Image (cartoon, rainbow, N blue to C red):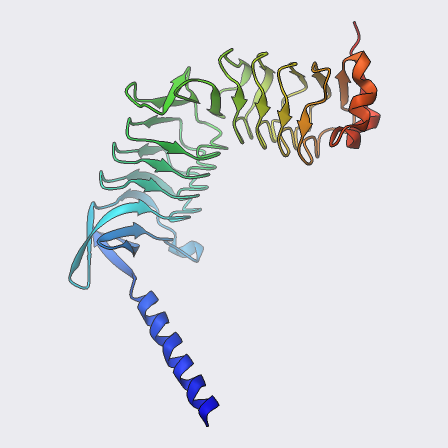
Length: 318
């Protein structure tokens, strides 16, 4: 009997918790459009995931209000949550209020019809892949409020030509539409809409995670100051055929050149094999040849990570 009583108490407790959780999610209509929200923290609200079925996806022009009300309480909209508008592929523009400080992971991921986005001077954080696959975007402007941009925030936006940054932003900068940190030591995002050749500035020491992923570049010059090539940095750059990794590089992260199907020649100039993470050249053409200094051929063939490609390693011809 005691056991049954405890089970009943547990069920009642769980039901109460579920109701409490359920009460945190609500809908609010602004200018004729209804969006889903969630109480995030105190008097703050978050735009939550909008759909579970394709028929429910938000489309057209969206205006997010600065404040919403729920159960008689007023909340400030401070966050666009994870996957809030994910795959809303008929969404064309979004107006974000000055109350928003965070744009979450994949918040607008694969919103292929999105052609216009204004990021207000209140946003501090843009999380990973926030605008991934937004094929309709051609340019993005980042205000001086932005302090954190996570990996591939604007990745795979195939028509994006420029990412510009406010001159008084103290964390980020841009040059010819390419996004860097303020010191220009880390290349963060190369716009996928810029095709052809690219010479990385001499100031760069780190090529960031996913920096060129899915880009249509055909040739890249890496300066002899770069030390680290980040995970997936050149992933799925199918137009790359020939790459030289300078002697300054000491670290190549996971799948840095993964799925570069056209990559046929890779020259590595460091006499000491750079540290290599897993699967750096996975799904690269089976015809790839890796050229290294003649005196280091055997080192490379037995080095961790490099040994996987031992049959592809040859001496640089002088």
